[in-house]
Length: 222
Picture 1: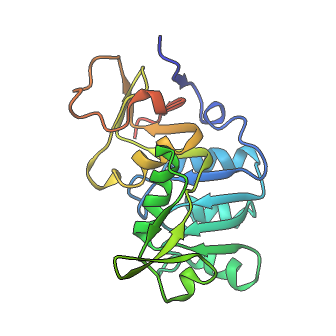
Picture 2: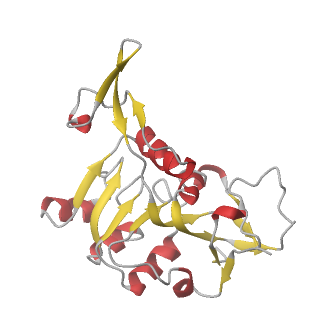
């Protein structure tokens, strides 16, 4: 029997997210962004959150709305500034939110390492810059590498295209970005999907995230 819960409401999907939680949020810009789950998290009221995502919010929706609501203590991301990231920009300049800037490949690998049970790894990206200041540096085969640690999440909120009742997920085009690795790296994984189908209806060769990693699914119809 599947352990994945098909939630009736967005409130049910994000219930239990605690103050101070580290929340992994899928998406590349708005592609794959679980906007309904983020809105539900705002309504749920959890505070002092650490958000791990590729971006730091777009315009006034999604992560930007969560930031504007004053719920975020720290953002760990690779691309915090763009033309419509004014909410984060204003909060950061005012000292109201902390930032850990991580190169995009490192961000993905640190999350993947958490899901794979890897304790740490060495990577050359950022060596010699402020991004690796204070980190252990090791020379391997004549090249310098910095020690990087996994990023574990208490919760992962991800967007997928279709899920089945066993929790298996398929994604649509570029919406398959950080969701698959984030699903493996969190204690609680919640997926927002356009529709839920019966187990066995998904092409097994197309399944990207196996249901063993997915705790809750919310069907949004969009």
